[in-house]
Image (cartoon, rainbow, N blue to C red):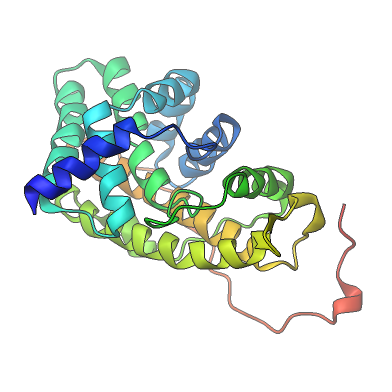
Length: 261
């Protein structure tokens, strides 16, 4: 099994790059800013002050780790060796902070957002068969167009209390969720043999629901990962924001909803 997996990971390097490689830079920045709203003020300020460096470092994710994650995303299960390698990557961020190299450590900690962001991304979780060319591009364009309307919900409040050793299980749940959501993207964004233009869809489309869930899961996963590392590095945990609880209620009549911008 290990040899087969190694061949698969190697084969991924030989394939041509797909049209979309995950969240565009603008959405990565939005994810970072929303995740900062869920962590203590001190950590939020340290990451926000280095926003550009964090996003750039996340985009320079180690190639070997990227191959492992890509292989496991295709298979739907994070393998023990992948989790061990990723945990070592997390440990480097903690060690840097404990050594007093605060600026470098914060950039490394912030850049760990790449893992939960990718695992929660339904645009990447297409399965072995892949998406039709152009589908992921329209999906990300839809999110960017509707981002101001996407409510960020914290589906797992306890995720913000996890220790580093527990983060892997959260990441697997993110991958499970994104793979489930990918089925809806395929059925809604590819019809009659053609990719659907994102401008033909609005907030009533199932694509909006997929976008809202995937984006919120990514924000939750990023904040949970940061907090697990910050806690281990003995960072300041005071002034932790308390998420507002929202109870479900019946939707208003369709005619009373605000028009689409």
